[in-house]
Amino acid sequence: MKNVLVHLLKMVILVAVLLLVGFAVKEITEYRSQYFKFPFPDELLFLYPLIPSLSGLVIGVDTLLRERGRSGSWTFNGYRLIFLALPALVFCVYPYMPWGMSWLPKGAVYLLLTSAPINVISGVLFGYFVITSFEKRDNEGGVGEMKQ
Image (cartoon, rainbow, N blue to C red):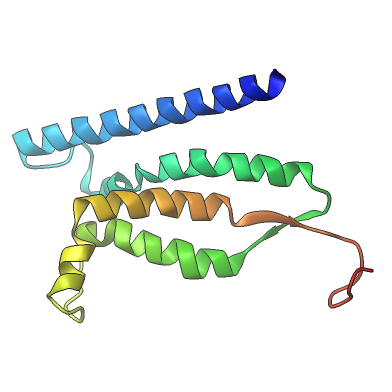
């Protein structure tokens, strides 16, 4: 019964965060359509596409909590950050970059990078990849030694 309540609580928290993120994006979008600017200083413009990352962080918390229960020391998976999180970040913030990416082809790649659903999905993935980059490694044995 305790397991069911824990999963129910996680689901409620996830739905609440998704609703808050959706509400924030909707309100900012409505403000932009009325006043043709963001409701915050231009220096903070880069934070707008990262709002969906909060959802990814919440989704990844379950994995982080499972890692907490394992034995070993905390490490950071840099490869996951470089090869998964950074490309997702580029897809997420591309439309809001102040400089042009003229070296990119102007066909399907440009449409893909400026697509609103792709930006939101990549923002969620960015948050998930960042939080799941923290993991535990066993302390038993040395580097390169095999367990028997």
